[in-house]
Image (cartoon, rainbow over all chains, first blue to last red; front, side, top):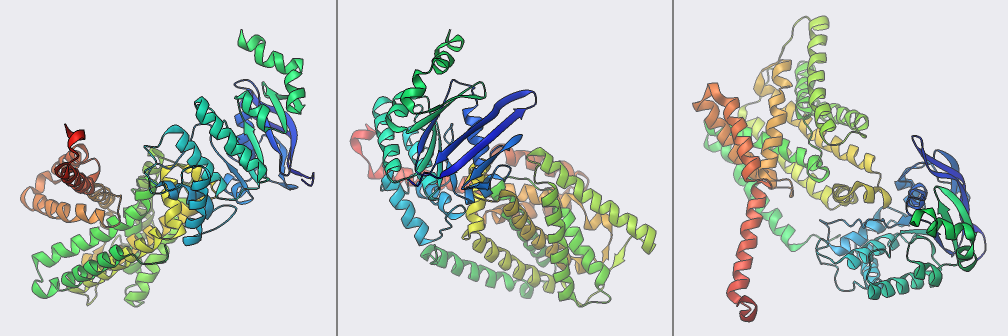
Length: 244
Length: 322
């Protein structure tokens, strides 16, 4: 709301040997903004997410959270500074109960709750993502959307300053998708700052304030969703040679 | 989580009774059965301490012999000059420092590399100790003469076992214990919820190593003559892994289910077939892995589950059943 940038990505480059997955990408995310990070498969979106969350270290360039450099810090340090994420391939903790999965997000990171406080907070979050009353359920047998809900609740449990959603809506059926979009809209209305990598264009159109488009590791567009999706570079990246 | 649950109180009460009963063993017998009780108590501590770290992380450590030997040598070197309790403290500190160094060196190793490293470490420490003794002391062995009897050793081990269980229980209900469960499930998630994975593992490895070192220290008077091949005997490392896996690593007391039958089995094998000990132990190990992949505790769980299923069946949901 203040207009100050919460996250700034400054000429970040990530090379795996000779392959440059992210090539001098820069963008900023303002407080309480929801931005979409889109682009064709293999364009470096997930790598970008991994660089922000600390799963990977950038080869060069700087990432700042609230003006403080976080690039190069280990993932747990970045998590403690208030960045939480979900994973492209959902990662729940199978031998823990549902509520323990959520508590896991609240104990070691940005907030450090423990005991009854953490438990109560986790119950509220389970309720919020639509898993109310199922805290004791074994997680291995949950449906895909429930696992995704659980992962989101875990990320929210740390009360993150920045939430990274990596294809959180992927693989959901149309009715689940509707629920998922409503859930994210809800978070946005709370004033959460969110970056979402997404292929579901309906979600991007209806949720995002702004989007950043990547193709082959390079940022090719950055602006309001409507404008960006009309740009010829973006159209050719999606429908051009890649899709032939 | 701050309260002690009713089931935990009951478990604690039963444990107290069992420990009390075990403490009476030396009064009943001071020969064969006491000696076996010492072996069981020793492996109970070693396997439970091993499981503290290797259970949640699934890192198979073969460094037990290294920590054990460091403990034994702490006593062997200091027995003429320092009081025994102080030597036990030194053993704890020395072996946990060694565990800390190993932990820091092996943070990036996982799976089979960690296993090989820990095996190599035990051998390395043994060679270094031998070299130091040959070059600077002149003899390879050390004499440990004390007034401590087998009964004293047993009581000390029993007290240590109680301490291991209490420590394990405290760890399990702490943030560290919760962190280890998350790490055991998924290290990537662990890092992303803010857990310093490396630090947690090293702390737990040090706790585990300290207990193993203390065990070595307590056992030193029993050896009377300490030399590297006996103090740093790699067989100890393997037996601890076998027994702990035989019992199961899912729960704190599960290794005990492996320790008791295996110690008795090992004793019978080495008494009746002294020339084929290794062979028979190897066959026993393979049979365990093949028939009891989740250990005795897995078997117990299966039986329990079958019983509850049968109960449900008997209580019956007729439409669903037919």
